[in-house]
Each structure stands twice: as C-alpha cells, then as structure tokens.
Image 1 (cartoon, rainbow, N blue to C red):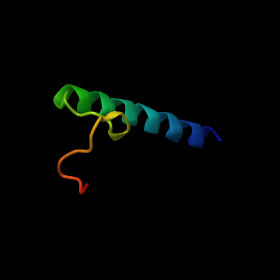
Image 2: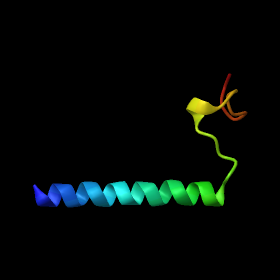
Image 3: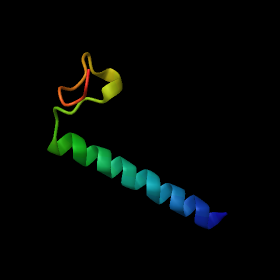
Image 4: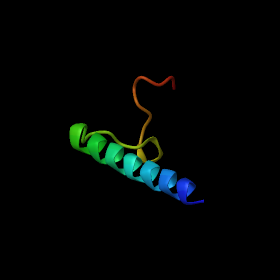
Length: 44
C-alpha cells in the first residue's frame, strides 16, 4: 500500500510540475473547456 501511495504522490508532483512549466513556457495556452471558440487547427 505504501508503494502505491508513493507512486501516486510522485505522479501528482510530476503533473503539477508539467502544468507549471507549460504555463511558464507558453502563457497563451487556454484549456479547451474554457476557450470561447475552438482553436483554428481543429475542424469546426
């Protein structure tokens, strides 16, 4: 059970770091759920 908790915590930390880096490197990225209109590369 402790190994599963360790893996879960490491995954959560890695996800948080990845999201933080994405916002730092590309600040204009907007999650699709919050976008007012679809991105131009998507078929409409």
